[in-house]
Length: 58
Image (cartoon, rainbow, N blue to C red; front, side, top):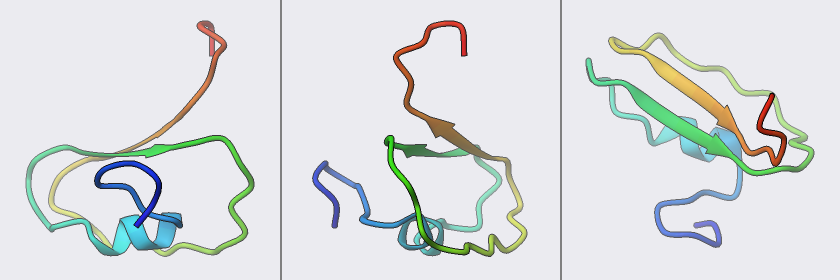
């Protein structure tokens, strides 16, 4: 588990826990370098990968 409720230490851990549902799901990424290769199997619903930024224009 990561530092926050329902968080993970790696992107691969988060992806592995995604249920295959029609509902939209979001993985929020904190700043950092992620040294991993991640394969995301096809999901029935949309997946959003959202990154943290302090820049309101990005």
